[in-house]
Image: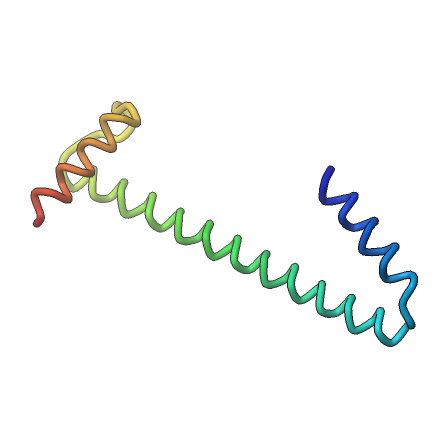
Length: 85
């Protein structure tokens, strides 16, 4: 909901500006939104890659991931990291 009120505030502010300035600001805001969207996608991809690596690591260590609780998974992954060093 906060997103909608923010958009309304932006629209009200833009309405008081000359058309050329409004267009420049609108493009800038669109670019910022696009940049934010790309950053979110990148974070999601990185998170998915990390999950995939962790799953492969557990399988390599001989564990069935479906039978592990999240806390067990974390301990195994941490011990695996410690054993490597």
